[in-house]
Amino acid sequence: MIEKIEKKERMKIKRAEMPAQKPEDRVRNFNEVPFGLTAEQAITEAARCLECKKAPCIDGCPVEVDIPGFINLILEKDFAGAARKIKQTNSLPAVCGRVCPQEEQCEIKCVLAKKFKPVAIGHLERFVADYERENNLVQIPAVAAPTGKKVAIVGSGPAGLTVAGDLIKLGHDVTVFEALHKPGGVLVYGIPEFRLPKNIVQAECDVLKDTGVKFENSTVIGKMETIDELFEMGFDAIFIGTGAGLPNFMGIPGEQLIGIYSANEYLTRSNLMRAFDENDYDTPIIRGKNVAVLGGGNTAMDAVRTSKRLGADHSYIVYRRSEAEMPARAEEIHHAMEEGIEFHMLTTPIKFIGDDQGRVVQMECLNMELGPPDDSGRRRPVPIEGSNFIMDVDLVVVAIGNSSNPLIQSTTPGLETNRWGNITVNPDTMQTSRPGVYAGGDIVTGGATVILAAGAGKKAARAIHTYLSNGAPK
Ligand SMILES: Cc1cc2nc3c(=O)[nH]c(=O)nc-3n(C[C@H](O)[C@H](O)[C@H](O)COP(=O)(O)OP(=O)(O)OC[C@H]3O[C@@H](n4cnc5c(N)ncnc54)[C@H](O)[C@@H]3O)c2cc1C
Ligand code: SF4
Image (cartoon, rainbow, N blue to C red; front, side, top):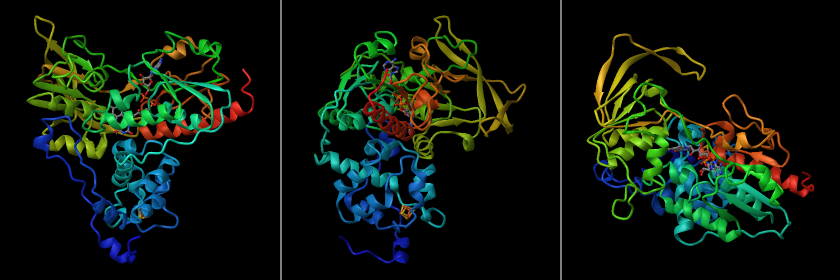
């Protein structure tokens, strides 16, 4: 264990800067942008933590990771032990260390945040999870004696994977049904390689497989089997974690023109179908020269940064509010700006214009100004009359949010939903209106975050275990 230093001295240590690819290099490849902390950097960063007794950072974490506990293990150079400590409450630390909005969760609550920079909790989380995986120290969890109970999990995003991991350890027989040909949900089809390398998600799924979880990919529940048919097949309980994968559109003239993608389609072609890798994959994708991405969230940032890497001369974010209202993570906006993404704020398209081949060539836009706050608490964008102008574009990606796919709801009698089509659950147990059927993640909340989906999965797994332990009456 390294010598503990005085609190005053610890506060003088500067927050470690994560080394990263230079913007001019990274816009030409799909490799991950930050390289991760070195062991030396991680230990120095860990020394900044004051090991607060009532650690407020833990309150900021949706799954209450023992943050000072794992940071202390880094100081003791027990990096794998630190990863295991995180995994007690968060089964996906290598993913969360990369994509969680720590700046709004644990780090904003860190006592150092007021006067200095907060401890780099996310970077430390990523470091220990990578150390454990890269050094083959990931332990296959012990599994309890078989209970004879079968659980079906529909959807393999962070919610479904978490439920699978927790229930297999308790001795249940777990099968994950996934519509796509690879498991991982948004982690594989949505978030690009340069933010979350796919081998990391695959490694998480491999551990689940080695623990005994069965994966049935390319299986669309609601089309191939319904929820009721899964019960008839012998499953005792079902978890629905199908996410929010139905793209919203603008609903303006010209939206059907060639060269206008939903962000889901664009990102799925590039990430899951590997269209960016022309040498090894023949997935078609439009490589626009003047690309407009509509929206201001993480999805929009991922799409616009992808377009730059696919060879665009100009990649624009077109967003109807101002930067202050953008829902994307601060780090993603910062990286996009460094990469030369051009931001058209307070702008909204009202019409897409095509050529005689039916391809989009221009977009008519309006300038906006901010009015009083709307239901979301953000200031409402109001069009400025007569401010119309034209933008030349040959590719448009619509990234204005997703809704839930209605397939399961419409094929499952008695499954209650709210007015947005999201499945309603008891918030303490994640049980739906149907006995033995549980749900969690984006299908319940609407588009949210990885850690909230994983947290919902943990809660559901506990409740499913109790239900199965009590005889699982149907
Ligand atoms: C582009 C993008 C970037 C994002 N970036 C971030 C970020 O940086 N940080 C963050 O915290 N969050 C981010 N999010 C949000 C986050 O990814 C989601 O909140 C999270 O993945 C939700 O997890 P989930 O398990 O509920 O669903 P999902 O990850 O959506 O997984 C659902 C799975 O269910 C499958 N499925 C759907 N219907 C069926 C069916 N009928 N039968 C079988 N399978 C089905 C789908 O194919 C999918 O694989 C991002 C989202 C997107 C789209
Ligand atoms: S609040 Fe900050 S300094 Fe205190 S325990 Fe958490 S990370 Fe360490």
